[in-house]
Each structure stands twice: as structure tokens, then as C-alpha cells.
Length: 483
Ligand SMILES: *[C@@H]1O[C@H](CO)[C@@H](O)[C@H](O)[C@H]1NC(C)=O
Ligand SMILES: *[C@@H]1O[C@H](CO)[C@@H](O)[C@H](O)[C@H]1NC(C)=O
Ligand SMILES: *[C@@H]1O[C@H](CO)[C@@H](O)[C@H](O)[C@H]1NC(C)=O
Ligand SMILES: *[C@@H]1O[C@H](CO)[C@@H](O)[C@H](O)[C@H]1NC(C)=O
Ligand SMILES: *[C@@H]1O[C@H](CO)[C@@H](O)[C@H](O)[C@H]1NC(C)=O
Ligand SMILES: *[C@@H]1O[C@H](CO)[C@@H](O)[C@H](O)[C@H]1NC(C)=O
Ligand SMILES: *[C@@H]1O[C@H](CO)[C@@H](O)[C@H](O)[C@H]1NC(C)=O
Ligand SMILES: *[C@@H]1O[C@H](CO)[C@@H](O)[C@H](O)[C@H]1NC(C)=O
Image (cartoon, rainbow, N blue to C red; front, side, top):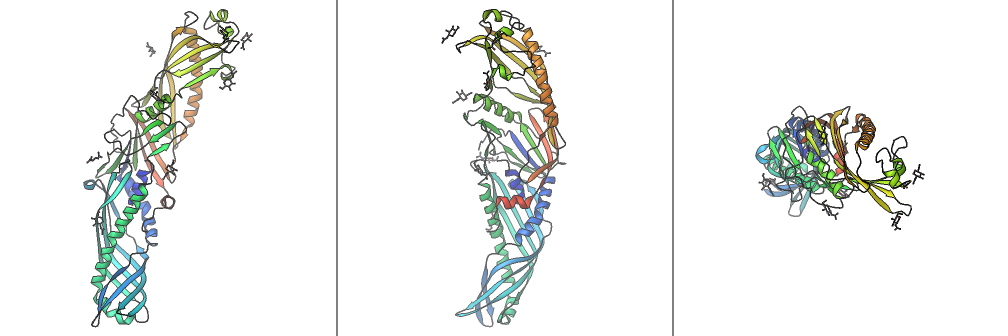
């Protein structure tokens, strides 16, 4: 169970004092689903466990005989539904199982001086109660950590049956010492539980807290020391910041706090601040990737713009006379970091773009002609339908202003109309893509279902249920639960 919760939350990835830009909240519905999904798996896993040796001394007739029970395996385990709850007091989880019955089998060995005897045994434990409390925290690198802070184990009653040639010698003594053996067994349970938590903690230490998105960007997802646990949810805050892989510089804007409302009807909520998206555009911008050189062969032939000075008459009337018959090239780049802004139910985007036009002389020299400043104003919407992220966008406003000119001043109205025409076409293509939708990111062994998305002030809130395949998940992760 613990494995489930922590593995789930750690799937995504110390920046003390920063506002988390990504927040993931697990609700009680999610916790109970996880408990249910992992119960069968835990039972299967338990049946593969070899328990530590148990040894002690029993009085047989008048002698103190040392005994060891070894190679103990769980043969069958009647696994009642465990109780798992968020545990505010320790910023973690409390898990308990009560009324567990287990049948065990292994080897017994006795020693008195040089006399040895051995055989096999069967044991049944009844009414086993185990309660454990784990605390969630962060290590110095912002990885999730789990620590056992409390463990209680109690065995209600038990029965032992010895087999083997000389087993009759010890039977009465074993019955007499059942209480001691039970205490020995009780004392072994918490170390095993603690060790499994330590093993899981080791596994968590191997998780990455940064991920390369593509050649340009890397996403940093350490925890930001803002884990909140209350009676109905567990919420983790992640840094959620993209950086350019070439230029790891901080953007001139900071992550703003936001409050993700609890949605108890969904298993999981995810809050994604506009900061995360804007850190990505900043990453592209600071790496110098938001620029392009446009030449004639890149403009579709049906579009009424030919990058030839002689064909520019309708837009810059003096150009054909000043520089006749030359090919042109346009340098298009973002003037400043383009920023997205999330408002309730809409996404605003108003990138400022500069276009520099050059004529290419016969000898290859580029002669600057003019420089335009383009201001766009886009509004968009995003939602989730049919398991896909969909959206729509439209251009609300466009301004074209002449910044500089080497060819004398001219009216920008014709160019503005041209850009508007081009954008109209672009928006049709874009909206076709957006309405087709994008598949939701699929984690390796988890799938989001019943997902809804809402754009809020400064962040996007996604609420979802999920389906996991735990067996695969843990086999893959090679989590040694009880080595
Ligand atoms: C298990 O861990 C808890 C918390 O660290 C500790 O209180 C308890 O004594 C440990 N139990 C054993 C048997 O090691
Ligand atoms: C962590 O990242 C490294 C390098 O990108 C990768 O090789 C490794 O498999 C990752 N580890 C995990 C547990 O994802
Ligand atoms: C993390 O937060 C906890 C509680 O909010 C605080 O006690 C602890 O000092 C913080 N750790 C760091 C390294 O800032
Ligand atoms: C990295 O980006 C910053 C901000 O845009 C810029 O000032 C700096 O020159 C860049 N460094 C490199 C090596 O490109
Ligand atoms: C236009 O640019 C593309 C890509 O940079 C290049 O492959 C092509 O040869 C260029 N065409 C002309 C006519 O310069
Ligand atoms: C530009 O257009 C003129 C007139 O159509 C033509 O003569 C000239 O070859 C063109 N220049 C280039 C570089 O294509
Ligand atoms: C290229 O030609 C232009 C115009 O004919 C001229 O002004 C410029 O000096 C030439 N550049 C070189 C490097 O020859
Ligand atoms: C378009 O933008 C310009 C310049 O920012 C502004 O003056 C104008 O009012 C805007 N028009 C609309 C319809 O928003």
C-alpha cells in the first residue's frame, strides 16, 4: 500500500522556499483505490517471503535446549482488508491490518550440547495485528522519502506442529513455551516491516528529479518541501520548472502560489501553474530558439507574398524601384519572452514578434530593408474530452508597426491585412489539430480515466481517476520488499 502511494506520487520527481509550480493531491478515494489494487499484490508477495530465523530456549524435561526455526515461509495468508488512512500527525500514512491469519512452514533444529535434532514444522498464527505509521519527507535533492515512525505488532494466538523422527521429544515443551515463541515472532514482525520501508526508501533514492523533454528543454521536478497531509488528502508540491539544456538561467518572473481545491470525487488532482509553461517558453527564448529565417521556398505558393523585391509593390511601393529583381529573406524572432496567462476558462497569449526584411544582393550580401514589430493577441480554451486534451484558439487582435526602414516610410495597412490573412489560415490549421486532440500523457503502468480540466486564475486544474497495473509496476521497478 505504502509502495503504491509513494510510487504513484514519486512518478513525477530542494528548492526550499519557492512556490511549487506543480501540485499533486491524492484524495481518500485514490488512497482507497490504491489500497484495493495493491491488496492482492501484497498477498502474493507475502507468500514469497522467507522470514528471519527465530531462536530461543525451551525446557525439555530437565534440560535447557536451544532451538531455531529457519527457512520459514508463508504458506497461506488470509489477508483481511487493511485500513489505510492519511495521518496528519506525522505528515504521512497510517496502515493497519487486524485479524490476519497466516500459516507458516519451515525447519526446526534443536541443540543440547553435542546433541542435534531437526525436522520440519507447520505453524499457524491467528489474529495478527500490525500497525505502522510512515512519515513522508524530502531528501536534500528533493526526492520523496519515507520513514517508519511507528510500528506495533501483536499475535493473538498460535499453534505449532513439529514433524520428524524425534519431534515427539519436544512436543510437550513446545506447547508449554508457546507464549515465548509467540513473543519471539511478534518481535520479528516490525523489523521486517521496517526493513521493507527502508528498502522502498532506497528505491526512491534512485528516482530522477529531472527529465529531458527534448533536445532543448529539461524539466526539474524536485519536491519543494510543501507536503501537506490532512485527514482527507495528501498533497505534494513540485518545482515544475523547465530550463534550457544549454542555458540554465532563471527567468525574470517567479512562480506564484495557487490553491488547488480538493476534489474528493476524483482520486487525484493536479495543479499546473502558468509558470511551468512560461518557464518552457523562457527556456526556448534564452537558448535563442525562438527565431527563424524565412526564405521564398518556405512560403506556400498559394500565399500572395513572394519574397522578391519586384513583387513587393503592393506592400512597400518604393521597393521594386530601389532594389529591382532581388530575392528577399525575413528574419522573424520573439522580441521578448512570450508569456501565457491563465484566466478562468481562458488562456491568453500575446507574443511580441519582430520581422526584419533583407534583400539578397547578386553577390550574396544581405541589405537590410525594414523592420516591423508585430503584436498578436490570442485567446484559447483547453479541455479534456474522449480522453484527449483538446483546445481551440483564435486571434483577437493584431498590430503591425514599422520600427525602422532603410527604404523610407510606408503604410503598414497592406502588410497587416496580409499577416491577418496568413494568421487566418494558420489558425484554421491549428484549430484542426487542437480539436483532434492530443493523447493524455500515459505513465508506464498507469492510465488516467474520467479526467477533467479547468483553467483557473494562474493555473490549470486537472482532476482524474486512474487505473494502474501494480504487478507490472512493481516488477518493473524491482522493488525488493522483503530481501
Ligand atoms: C521500526 O521503526 C520505528 C520508527 O523508526 C521504530 O520506532 C521501531 O522501534 C522500529 N522497530 C523495529 C523493530 O526496528
Ligand atoms: C534517470 O535518468 C538517467 C539519465 O537520464 C537514466 O539513465 C535513468 O534510467 C533514470 N532513472 C530512472 C529511475 O528513471
Ligand atoms: C521543510 O518544512 C518543514 C515543515 O514545514 C520544516 O520543519 C523544515 O524545516 C523544512 N525543511 C527545510 C530544509 O526547509
Ligand atoms: C542565457 O540566457 C540569458 C538570458 O536570456 C542571457 O543573458 C545569457 O547571455 C545566455 N547565456 C548564454 C551562454 O547563451
Ligand atoms: C530556404 O531555407 C531552407 C531551410 O533553411 C533551405 O533548405 C533552402 O535551400 C532555402 N531556399 C533558398 C532558395 O535559399
Ligand atoms: C524576382 O522577380 C523578377 C520579376 O518577376 C525576376 O526577374 C527575378 O528573377 C526574380 N528574382 C529572383 C531572385 O527570383
Ligand atoms: C555587393 O553588392 C552590393 C550592391 O551591388 C554592394 O553595395 C556591396 O558592396 C557588395 N558587397 C561585396 C562584399 O562585394
Ligand atoms: C488591438 O491592439 C491595439 C494596440 O495594442 C489597441 O489599440 C486596440 O484597441 C486593440 N484592438 C482590440 C479590438 O482589442
